[in-house]
Each structure stands twice: as structure tokens, then as C-alpha cells.
Image (tube, rainbow, N blue to C red; front, side, top):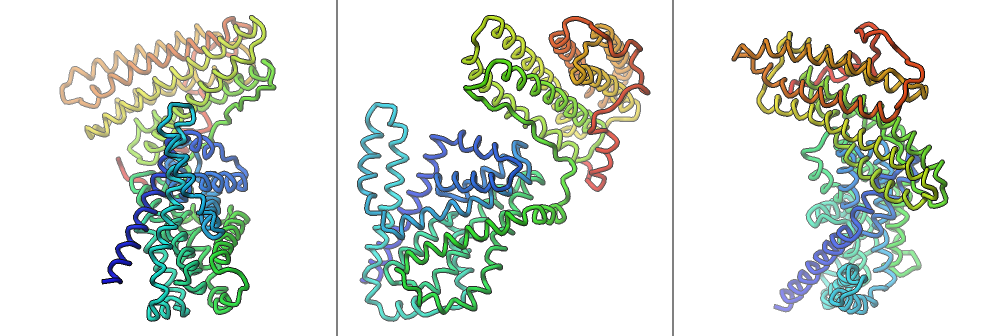
Length: 560
């Protein structure tokens, strides 16, 4: 009966600990979730920066699983590339060591004070009230660890149990136990915290505790694999890298554990503190080793799941600096507008190719690129709002309004490209395939539109205005011709593909109008026309993301 009471008390305390940790992570994400996502999205090409960001974010939210899932979702949304996400994943394991250090050094004694402070902050009406629940659950996590320690104290008198837990066991079994338990509770911090409490109580020997916390790293990858189930190939790469990274860390240090594991009991340090320090060294060393070999590691992932030829380079976003003058702001926005325009041109190229073909890879690439613009738009809106504070003269104000209007037209161009892509979604949903005559119509119209894109893009790069009116008229001629050709096909009721393309013509017309509006705003006067000849197929140059190269890369894909 006494054993049953101890079991119930212990399980209750463990459930409270898991509940507290889960709610603490949720509160942190609620209060600052968007900031964390932005911090993760700002991971640069330097892997070490990604490692630091991953470590800091995980240290705050106390969940490497949450960091990994957020990172993978950003990869799936196109905000992060797979290669940029790997460093964050490496750093997430380092961030989880904070919990172990706090427990080992018995800082949990402050838990009741944090609970009281958090409770009163949450019920008073002030700006600090938003942090009340966060502080409350932070204290609750460590208070529940104290409950676990207190409820398990009677087990110290159970000689049979003490003999099993204190005697060295097979490290492989211990690693498997840590892996399975962590996969069930969905948190390596829970496993590590319990291992340290058990070690602190003398219920678990250091030799048995170390492989358990190593196995916890493998178990935490289960969350990422569940989250990635319906995501694209880049997100699957991030999840696989998370798994292989944690497996690799265990495999690297397992020989050391097997050879020197029996000497852990000779460490002249309090077992709980020794375990927390080993946990820190293990995760830090693993992250550093994999960071040094990050390029061959990512190439190995590419070898397994494919090189991701449909991936794209992320845009460089302007960073607000209150010390900038308006000239610097203008230069950043001019460059940003030029880069965004070229990116939209590639988006259009990918979308029209997805309309012409039935390759899953092209369709998914177009979907991701379009979704990425939502993130870009939000970032530019924030930058515009902050840049207003740098205006000192009326002329600067006029220039800023003009730049904002340019971006407004660019995002309108994006809206029309999105509408074109939605036409492809409808075709997929209704299993409509285009016949050869309609395919020729689409290719002809998209080629002429890309020609208009190329002319504007060349003018932006060379800072030379073009004869916008002439180019717009010639593109309109092709749109009208395509519309007439489509109308003749609509007479046949069996041509459902022609009916599906009516919106394509309408959206192409809107796209042409928005391109013209942007070009007129960018180049209000014709200084030196780049081209006066009519747009012809032979003179058109595709963007770097050419249709021929795109059609080849996903050659092994199945039809959508």
C-alpha cells in the first residue's frame, strides 16, 4: 500500500512538471512567438550565428522540440532555406542544458517566490500583466520538480530498487529508455530534469543517468518527424538533419561511455552537478563538431533526399538603424525593390511553368515562393513604419511615399501572380489537363509577359528609362489575340481546359496593367528607350530560372 501511495504521488508530481513545462513554453510563444520566429528567420549564412540563435531561443522557451518544429515550419514556408536551418537545429540542443543547470545547482528553491510574483502580476491591470502567467509557469516547473524529489524520498529506503538503479546497467538499454520516454512526453527537458532529480536523491547512479540523457536527444526528434508529415522536401530535410545530428552525437560519444563509463562514479563532485555538466559538455561538443562539418553534412542530406534544385535564394531584407540618414534608407529600398522585382519575375516564370506542366516539384516550388512573399511583405511594412521616424525634410517625405507606392505596386504584381497560381490549383483539383493548342497559347502569352518583365528589369539595373507605352501596347496585343483564340475554343463544350484558362487571360491582363503602373512610377519620363522594336520570341530572354532548366530538374517527379 505504501508503494502504491509513493507511485501515485510521484506520477502526480511528474504530470504537474510536464504540464508546467508545456504551459511555460506555450506562454513564451504567446507573448513573444512572432519575435522568436523573426529571430529564427534572421539566421544568416554563417552557421555559428544559427547555432547561437537556436541556443538562445531554446534557452528561453525551454523546448528544443518547439524550436525544431518552428524552424521546420519556417523552412516549409520558404522563410528559411534548409542549409540555414541546420545551424539553428544544432544550437537547440545547447539551449536545453539550462534546465539541467538550474535543477542541479538547486536554484529551484526560488520557485515558490516566482509562483507568487507571477500570480499577482497576472491579476493586476498593468503592462507587466502579460508576463504574469509566464513567470508563474516558470516557477511552477521547478516547484513540481521539488514535489518529485519530495515524493520519491521514501524510495531511498527500498534496498532492492536502490540496488537495481545504482548498479551499472547496459548503456544501450539506458539510451533506449531515454529515447522512448522522451518521445512519449515530447520533451528532452522532462527526461533530463527527472534524471537529475533521481540522481540528486541517490536513486540513479551517474553511470546509468548519462546514457539516459543521451537517449533523450534522440527521442526529442519524434516531435519534428510528426510535424513534418505533410510538409515539403526542404522541411523533411530539416527533420532528417535533426534526427541524424542527435543520432550522430550519441554514436560519437558512445565509445567513450563504454570505455570510461565505470569511472564516472569516481568523479569528486556532487552527482547531480556532474550530470548537468556532462549534459552541457555532451551537447556543446556535439554541436561544435557538426558545425565544423556542416557542409559535408548538408551535402549528405541532399544526397539522401535530393539536392533541392527547386529551392531559391532568400531576399536580403533592409535592417532598420536609427542612425541611418534618409539617403541610406532610400538606397536600401531601391535595392530591395530591384531584388523583389526580379524575384517576382522568377515567381511568374515558375507559376506559368506549373500551369504548362504537371510536375509536383514545379508546383511545390511555386507554392513556396508565393508563400514567402507574405513574409517579405510583413517585413517591409514594419521597415516602412520605422523609417518614417528618420524623415527630416519635406522632400524626403515625398521620396519615401514614392518608394512605398513602388512596393505597393510590386505586391499588387504578386497578387496577380498568386491569382494565376490559383488557376492552376483549380485545374489540379478538377484534374484538368491542357491540350496542345491551349498550351501553345499559354506559352506564347507567358513568353511575351516575361519579355516585358525583362525590359523593366534591364531598365532598373542600368538605371535607364524605357518606352513603357510601346511595350505595354505590344503586350496588350498578345493578350487580346490570346483572348480571341480562347473564345473560339470555348464554343466546343468538351473543351473544359479552355474554360479553365479564361481566368488565366483575365489575370494576365491585370498583371500587365500592374507592371505598367510600376514601370510608369519607376520611370515617369522616357530618357533613352532600350528597345523600340516589337517584342518577338527570338529577342526575348528568360530569367535565370528558365523554363527549360526547370522542366529538366524534376524529371523524375510524378504527375500531379
